[in-house]
Image (cartoon, rainbow, N blue to C red; front, side, top):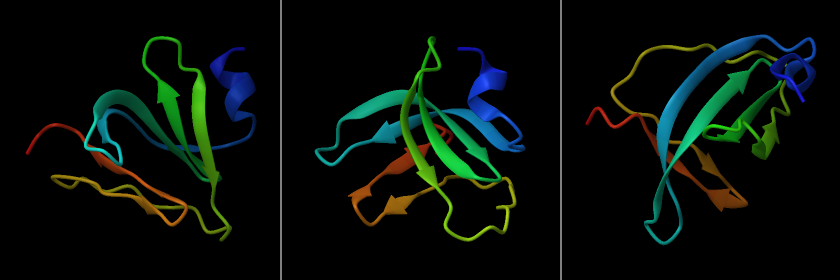
Length: 85
């Protein structure tokens, strides 16, 4: 499956290689992809979708540069870091 098949008509807001910190403080490198429709956790190298979280509100997110980013999903908490802090 190509990247275009994955995204369809979605607009890419942010795509970045980040460190994912799991529930038990395990750290792994992933590709964080944010579109106007969903947030994706992609496997490094293969870009296989490991998780997709769709936005319930149809208002596209805005990207801005910060030192760090932390996402918390109520069903499963995730923290992402770009390693710069």
